[in-house]
Picture (tube, rainbow, N blue to C red):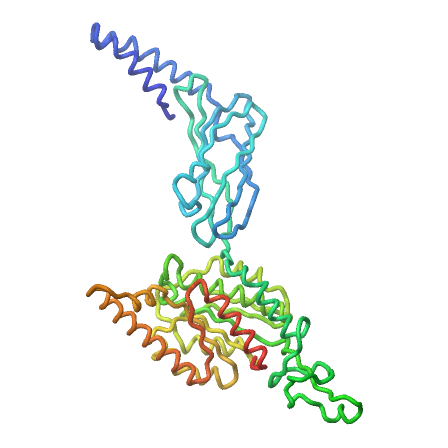
Length: 437
């Protein structure tokens, strides 16, 4: 049984004249006995809670930052009218603010033998699976003095997917890809690219592209045209170790790496390449394989990345290299999204790089902190000068680490969270245009 505020108010109003005019036990009993009988009668007339039936429907997935609607259908099989207050409980991270949690509380009435549909609006603040908790129902009596209260388990899961904010850069990169394919401009020549066709020579063409045998058979000079390679293998390796948990602004490094991964995968599949994914720290946290060239692997990537979280452990670089080599039996472009901190790179990554670069093209992408650049440019006070010195030292150390990687033949992309995805896509297109995939 649950007493309402109305019962407390009636008890207070009834006790007030007794306490002022003639406080006595008889007076208290004269007020409280009828009130107690009214409360018991109200409780008895309230619709039962245990027999209520619940079903769910609605959204099962939503992108981070968007809203999801989950419907809860309440069926009242009893003959009594149900006047109820209901709380549809979800984890606190299912909303971005406390004000939005009000959508989980409902007041409604259901006549006997009928049903009502209630809608709860979710706007999750974090990636991952949001699992519905219990549904608590308070069934009020006709007088509103007492209520029956109980809860039901109505399972439902909403998967919160990465936001993929970098998809706004996809049209411009696809346009550049079409230029490389020769569909919107003159085809380019690149070492190791695939032969496409012959065309007439125009001033400005590379003389090395002239096909002298074809020229001898016709009256005009003929040049070879080339197209970027297709059906190449791309392995994206996400470092989910402790460095990926660091936040740059309001975004964890891992989330920025995920966004860059999704843009690269969307672009590479349009280019006819195969994209595979491994998330690793000391063991494989997630793995996605594309079976066919140009296959739409993006939905599988998004679903796999949704529940991925950083692990607060040091990444096993040797195990990462071994896993990457086992997952890439053919020559591939290995894209490693990790940090450029000096200690993890020098002690972990650099000793294992020769194993990767011997057979594969390696690209390392890292998230830079814009605050360090702002620190390096600050002046005016003593504290600002010390901050500038610390920022300049951090930048110099980061450049030194990147130079060490380049010395091993690795392409390095170091950019701020908002710029990492387009910079990685540009690096992929550059490698593809030059036939280095």
